[in-house]
Length: 116
Length: 113
Image 1 (cartoon, rainbow over the protein chains, first blue to last red):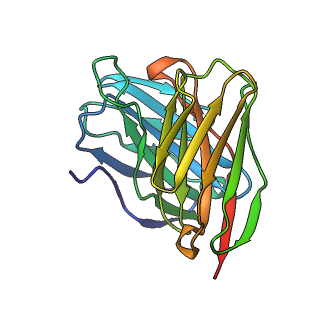
Image 2 (image 1 turned 90 degrees about the horizontal axis):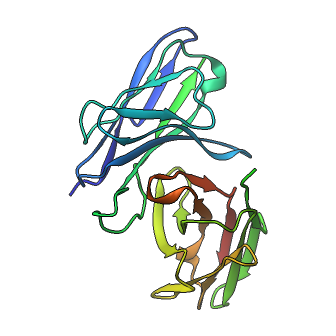
């Protein structure tokens, strides 16, 4: 199993550009989520999904869009990048139903995004 | 508001010492609690998961305990090694199996040879 994969590893954007951060998992996990990590702020939840076709907002959703068309993929879209979105972005997944196994959450390696 | 606090923010110990990292949470109605390790510039690696009905979990030199009534968890590391140097994060899940994790800001551990 590859676990949770994220692409790209690094990205530099100019203010106003848009892009999509990719996240995929091969563990058949229902739950997937996106976090951003900033110095002094810790990890903050952006958006999450409890299954294909279902998404919801986390603590800091503004400026980001998500969709979940398959169980495996959960892309994060930056609509119009701003310097405040400079951060490290992590994708995570876990089981979420009582039919699943452990509810341990697994994280991807992260995407380092700089917006100039 | 549900909050998770980790004290201290940083800790430096000599190699071989046993140590305890602390995590406290404001709402005792947790679903589970997870400890992670993060190396500089890397992602999060899960260390231990404790369900709300459990009191402790062990993996090798690591032991995590949970006391819901007092809103506390501890991560005990035995016989520390320089390779244990990393940031340790505590995260609490509320709202059942479909709930989200709330993270503490971490304890940065440095183990000196």
